[in-house]
Length: 263
Image (cartoon, one colour):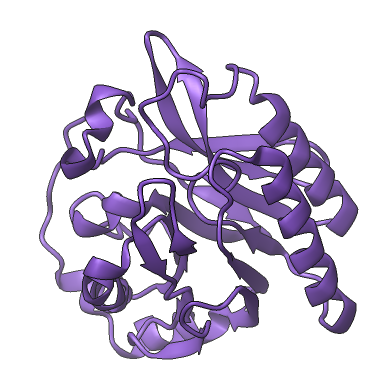
């Protein structure tokens, strides 16, 4: 198995100001890559261009991805990497919370958020995703998840179809302990690397977010973590040969229960 250089962006999303978010992100990315090696995968928080505003009809991109997808393509091409983040996209009478994965050559894959945050009435405005997705980069198989998906272990169960789990979020500070705990648990129970990417700052509904952007190994140990309440990009190179050896020496997955996932 090969290696993968991951960069994860933790920042304060400007509420409903797409251009301000693009400008802020471009500066953060430029400053980071001045002194750091380029990444294979650059990850942005959930709803990175607008904030988590689900109840307004004007806060959604057209089916073709619109301005946000065009910006992701520009950054992917500029830094010759895969760039991934979620965008609210028009879909039928509602919208979907779409996790775009944009490759440097312009290829686009996506995953639509499956578990909708009932407490925030997300289900009233957003259509539930209908498929589980695996994305491959440099031979590494990746499971994309969005925020609330993290609470549902059956959806994220590793059926030996992925090596890395990625969750991007607008996870509030009030439930930060849950975020930290579940990221570690998902890494350990699934014997996979895990990356969690969260925002900071207050959103337009005065909900505070403290971050917790982190990269965790298959034993649940933190490799690198962003400082709380600070805008920064964290990055590291993951060596998947270490994961392969760990699973060879401790093949707990062979004793996993059989199950069928019904969509």
